[in-house]
Length: 323
Image 1 (tube, helix red, strand yellow):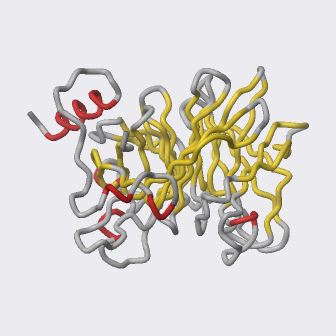
Image 2 (cartoon, one colour):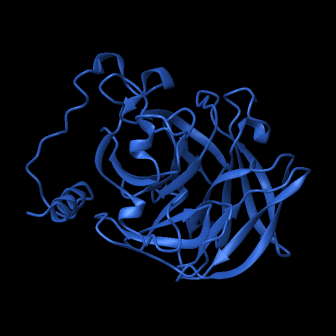
């Protein structure tokens, strides 16, 4: 069996599309699982790597020689990846066997995240590129990810390249919303106190994505920054919520109630796999999306250039969450 076919089978099994006789996967033998239960950052459970590949191995490299991946969303059985160094959106199959670029140009887009609607549209969120009380913006994209139009949000940020870093679309009672995740604690500066994660609930009002409410992430999720947010409907009006932090190299899993517009219930924490010496490998994870209840896909931007971070940079990854 080829490697691509093997990956497809593993993913199909994880997504309950085929049967497997494999028992539960073993966690890292070097981790004392007796002390890890996922209830806090210090007791985060490690996720299991299923597959990963450099984006340059899946996508064209003639006009762009690298991919600064910033966001990912699963839609219609395909993974769509945004990069902040081009306006083209990449479409990649879940077996990580092939990919292509949609319409756009190899120019800086400042796309920090991407999300998909239930009717085939996409939205990419854009952070300010200059200092001085500048609003974040949202690009609406067609089903083929071609640019449609650009709208401002009513949320401004003081510093360039600091703004909304994640986005997730949802529809509630016929109205559509965007959950826009601030990069820094309290939507402020890099040195803001951890435990002050903020998500803006945005709705389209007279051509502007206007804030309806500011949601506070649990203080327990005291990440150094926040890189992306993903939703998965539970079928009862609530959503499983996944938030990833690049700087903390961790994931938080919680629940969003749309009746109260608040994060409720228990928190679960997960860490990315480390190398044999315990060093962080996944140093630049910028985007995350659900593939199933226990399976997620993620993308990594360029890293700071140090080992082992460079091994995982500018890549797409699939992980399984521990049961």
